[in-house]
Image 1 (cartoon, rainbow, N blue to C red):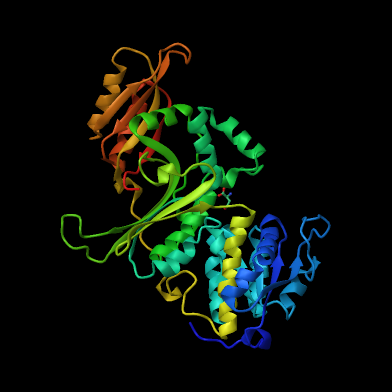
Image 2: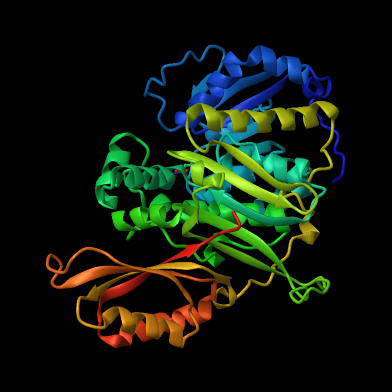
Length: 462
Ligand code: HSE
């Protein structure tokens, strides 16, 4: 990256860097608090103070419950962007169009930017990073993936020497809270979701979280930073947590697994399968879905609203990142860490050598995806079968006919309550997804099942 000399005498002399905040909600309040409460330690680390000079929000009436001495607060985002006291603009308003415009306007005005908006970056990241690079400015976004966990910085810097092999993550706190509660209480999804909403762990409209979209936004950024893969969240096969039943958690426990909404991005090196050397071609496996993982794995122990990510590098091996993925102060911690990094660049009078997406822009390119049907793994199948003679035999024969090996079959409960149908659970041996899909189609034709077969993939390599 080119070194650009700052034209701000105060900043260049390392005296002070000014920050402006657009969007004064929960995280914005956290940023103001962190900057104030931790001003001394921040200055000891930076060598100069970091000052919030201005805040813009359409709502200037609500009392945020914190003193704003010395901070100009009004609804004028454009004025904030143009304000010469503001070196770095923090965008915390959420959404797509307005923040995109404000960020591009900030860059055009020569301001560095930091944001927590993963949805925006997952959709418009390329445009924003290109504009910033052209202008010689930084875009910080540590807070956008897993809140307070310094994961992006780890990928960009601490793990920079590695070929990344895989990223496995519990990337969404809301769904992890719901799954943990369903497992602990045996209650159905809807009542646990309602409680999560009452407790403030889930939004009134929980769609983005529950359907896995928020996790896919984050995984898209992680896959780019880990593998240099250009992709949008829309390309990531995504399944949410609706439709899981208490019986799935009971059975998972019996089989030695826990259920997590897992984001996976894994490199498949081609040409090395038969013991030979990989030939350099690489495909990307990427998906978000409720997954059974061994109860003994580190990720399985991540409960409640916490996030955790395991990144494997070819030199370092597995590394684990755990912490609060949301919330006022943890997210503010990440935002302010970006401010400090950018402030150092400003004080030095130029941009550092680290590319925001870890790879240089010219090395970020679409990567071929592994076809889902080529993936191999164990699976858990749950179905409702009419309780009639020979039914289990017909189910196992249908699976066997497509080469699906069976590790365990469990028929639960007695017929009666559900119109003569009983839950049947099958745990398969490792099997190719294509064969599994054919076997499920075969099961549907038997006439023995009520409703669809629910499949949960099992990920042993976490
Ligand atoms: N709704 C998100 C979560 C917040 O539950 O993890 C941070 O993206």
